[in-house]
Length: 390
Figure 1 (spheres, rainbow, N blue to C red):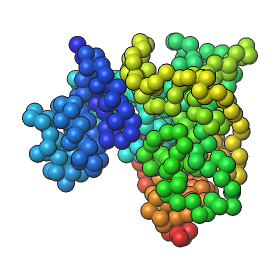
Figure 2 (figure 1 turned 135 degrees about the horizontal axis):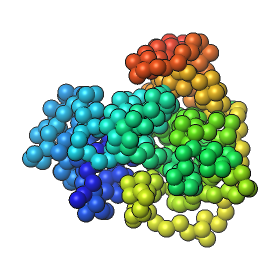
Figure 3 (figure 1 turned 180 degrees about the vertical axis):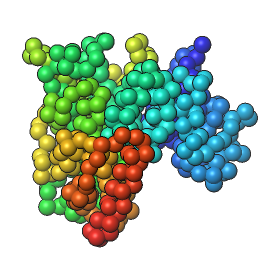
Figure 4 (figure 1 turned 90 degrees about the horizontal axis):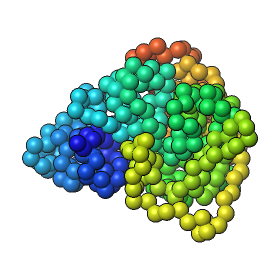
């Protein structure tokens, strides 16, 4: 019987890649629900191709525009409650959690509590509410499979059945980063960076927000926080290393001196296929890696002057409490302002730093507390963004 899958964030790059892998294995997988915010044309085409039972949009207006364009028997829903409903539905086996940002927290938590196999591409669920999310996974009893290429690589390099990295004899984790489009750009030109330049990633095809995060290396900072929760390690045991070829997706160093790495072409269908079929392996559609064509693999330490967001993220996870939630919220506001040409590229880190310097931390004991921290940090970030506006 085919495995029923809900794809949260189906219209984004991870969602599109997930549907590509699913379509290659119709005997194994069937789409139960697709969700997207407002890209009606994409959702209409996807619904016709994959024939889900449900499609969920972010607004009533988008749902009304989509409804006449879906196949017979497909119900169109909208809003936050509908997202949680299709994530936790009794018939669903697996949930691809690929909604970008804080908006993905509640439906991903719903899937965790319902005991689903959760394919986690929404790192913000762990950044904002790591303790609460991991508790929900334990209570639900489902499986958690990381989709970010780096965390999926780490997962593949750890032995089966480990409880956390320390139990597996891990010395430290090496989290790889491409360095983005500005790895060698002169620092004195960063103020003139445009949104289009920041979104032109040299190796990966991603959405605009995550592309900017890659350019500032905030994405790697969020991934550092995610790694701490996923693998039970302290932040000082996660080392970020720049690897511009994006072939070695991450490495795990063991106490006996061994270092294991996962290699592959930079294509998100590889970690998606791995997580979908785990513990088996299926074809992903990705071309085999040709090491002779790659020819060389380079590694270097990140420049803290070039990438201040990386240090801000590391400080936030060390500080604990709701500092990571504040970091994420401030970054989302600052990146949105940059993409809207209201803030300079270098001001992104300045806004985040200002919010964290103003932050009065508390321990998030509930989702309501996390959401309150998120709202408060966004308001602060908005104030600072306006003060630093172009």
